[in-house]
View (tube, rainbow over the protein chains, first blue to last red):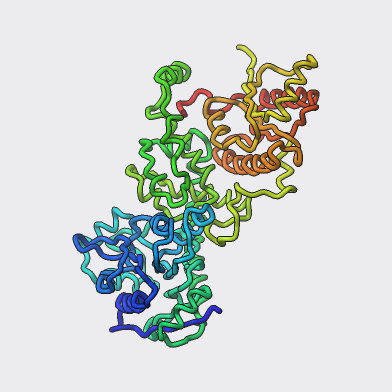
Length: 378
Length: 140
């Protein structure tokens, strides 16, 4: 396995090549639809679209540095039951990792799916991307992608990508059946596509692509990207740990939180069908609030803010894929991702677990070994 | 000023540690009155959120105590509890909680003496650690 294929560049454009590639896929008999980030017809914005008619692939833009939401949940919905046909989905690596976590929880089903992934060059926050998209023309995605791949600055109009993307150490779609390689490949010579699974190999070999070989610069190029992000990540973690190393500081860090729970809604791996914080458990009796206020002198309203974030850390930090949608969704710009990443790296490490790495690995809190962690007992 | 009396919340499983506490009582063994026992059917049902809530509400220490490995009435609840406590021991100290405030023990149904020892020892330790930092703050 791990066959390599090559698609000739269409009119020297990465975007046109990808659109042509997706069109070839959609033209295959058994593929019903493709889920792919597309430009909206009514506004220069990117959203995932479920495309059945190949002519709509002219709007597909999977290289736009825009990440409006984590599509893992959408794919989870689309695969809840048999849909009647095979679905190809173009996802970012972090979306695939989140989907793998959902599959483990029986909230996603990969059987009738073909996962198509591209090396991820990162994205801007929704707010920043909206401004950029309004100011630039339709060639922006293409130009930005080439610039980033050639090692130029990731900033545009003085704005940089989200902290989540700048600190992401898994920018390669290791879970995909079809992996489109951008890092370390000479795009001028064509688009390098690797089969990531038996399913992907079969699909690619039916697509009349030229066979190819592993690019020699690939590993070092990927390593280079990861090295930069790793150093960004270490700096970020050191900073956030210093800002939140006591409850008092954590309170200050979360002071702007209004309990809107957008971070939980945006989180692809917050897996509960009904969050306990949305239930009657937190519909306290009026006298309870008064008792708290009596005891402490004063309480901040709404209550349970720190409790909510700590609980979410305990519930889902082992499944956190670091996509940063929590920060993206926060109306008050609390650096939620930074906090969660600083904790999830620790909690995943103690269980020797990496969210989204392997669908066979059980979530750490659902499994156990008889002889482990004996030092914490007693 | 009055001497500091810590409050300790103990989640104890119905089948082992609660029975041990009962035995300690009927055997007239002494243990400090600082502990508030919360009987649960199994330590495997102690969601990390309960422990967090206890601390945020001002508990100076939390004890989770169940059956010895292999003795769980529900086969493996205590193993799952152990992972959750391991998780909390990674998360809480990150925000300045002293790890010693959270304890996990196995106390079998016949270990009334052991129960009285552990509560006494834990309350002494908490006295040394002083009040938890959330006691007087506005954290809820």
